[in-house]
Amino acid sequence: RRSLKIGVIPADGIGKEVIPAATRAIEALGSDIPKPEFIDLVAGWETFTRTGVALPKETVEILRSECDCALFGSVSSPSRKVVGYSSPIVALRKELDLYANIRPVKSVAREPGHESPVDLIVVRENTECLYVKQEILTTGDNGKEARATRLITERASGRIGQMAFELASARPRKHLTIIHKSNVLSVTDGLFRETVRAVPKLPKTNGKYDDVTIAEQLVDSAVYRLFREPEIFDVMVAPNLYGDIISDAAAALVGSLGLIPSINAGDNFVMGEPVHGSAPDIEGKGIANPLASIRSAALMLRHLGYDTGADKLDTAVDAVLRDGKVLTPDLKGNSTTEEVLQAVLKRL
Ligand code: NAD
Ligand code: K
Ligand code: MN
Image (cartoon, rainbow, N blue to C red):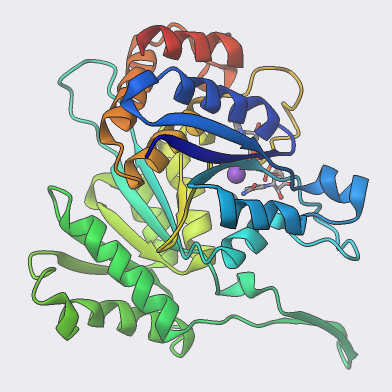
């Protein structure tokens, strides 16, 4: 490859502050990766208020036809129903069939050599569950009645299960926990649980996952145990909504949502995205933590096979955290987004 074409969609709020930090960190990698070419694209709430469309067709087309990968910031989706609006990130994940949302959560020990107590990956199914967004409102004997469809399919559960086993088998502990609530939702979560459990027995896996140990945890007690004994978890695989909630909870364990990266991955495309949202409470102040976005860029590069570049970004971020002198307010520091970026660039 002579160049790496990266679609850049900062979208709304602090996405506009942290995604530029990630692109500058990528640029600083020099010859460790093919020359990056950034293609600016729009989507989001602001795009919707300006044009009436949250995810322009052109954005999807350019991602499909011209880009090798993409970086996405965050959208400011309103909590009320707005006619014609639908979250562009949920739509993008579906449009590009980015069926796996991979979210590593790892604490960085201040003292070198000190084992970190949290080191896990949340593997979240990214296309179905309640996020199919089939909601209906009717009026009956109880006043208004709202219903939502929760879709779990064998296909989506099987491929996210496969992805989770693949990740688990590549890690030292090789341990996978299946998150569900099939004591109550025996049909939907039951299907998820059974399908994931069946993955190692599929003929095509050829005994590849035999050394992965499998555990299960109901989603509510999983959150409880996550706070009490996070070290029991290695790879966690979950349906869409549980995975969303568990990864924000895990973020609290390591200090801030502003540290947690993710990739949205499919068989043909990958999109890096910080786990956090558009953070309206700190938007425009220049104090958003850019490290989640820089780590998302690293995850994206690693997924594409550019391990040297990815390692450099991760090592620089870890060094800034270990040093602990240049941190944004979410980590109890008093530095700005730009100062943290400069601290990372200095170590690259
Ligand atoms: P949020 O993640 O935006 O913020 C939660 C808290 O974490 C806030 O106090 C915020 O200041 C802090 N925080 C988040 N990222 C930070 C960072 N990089 N540096 C420092 N502090 C950070 O969640 P929310 O407040 O529930 O949602 C706000 C908006 O974001 C909503 O409109 C929601 O729909 C949207 N959202 C979008 C995505 C996405 O784009 N994938 C994900 C989650 C939420
Ligand atoms: K986001
Ligand atoms: Mn979320």
